[in-house]
Image (cartoon, rainbow, N blue to C red; front, top):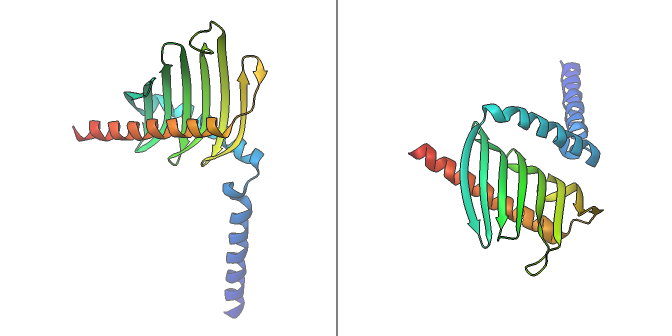
Length: 176
């Protein structure tokens, strides 16, 4: 009986260690990014069967026209066109898992300023682990660029607004 208890106790310890070692939260950055890529593919496959909510959101000079997709009660994806004044527009794709942003794809085109005709093109792919950026690629025109903390905060702020608005709109449609 004592040997069986020791065996069971050792098994629990080994099981706990294996969970810690192989847990996604302890995975390397490359493994986390690969898991996010796989999850994005899974989400894309779910979109045809997901519940879709359309909406608009205004924030300063920005007008967001979005479609939010829900699987059961979980928001998994937001597609949005953002009109920034009359000079720029952006098409963005946001992917969520367990109510957290995991990936953002941002494509903005427009003009550099109000009095210039110089065109501007921005493309970004950003992988998130909570509010932390795991990795990104960013090109401004044809040149690679650095993702700044202000840009990261702007992405997270916009996503939070869209996320909350989509949840509110879905709740309102369910209550009617």
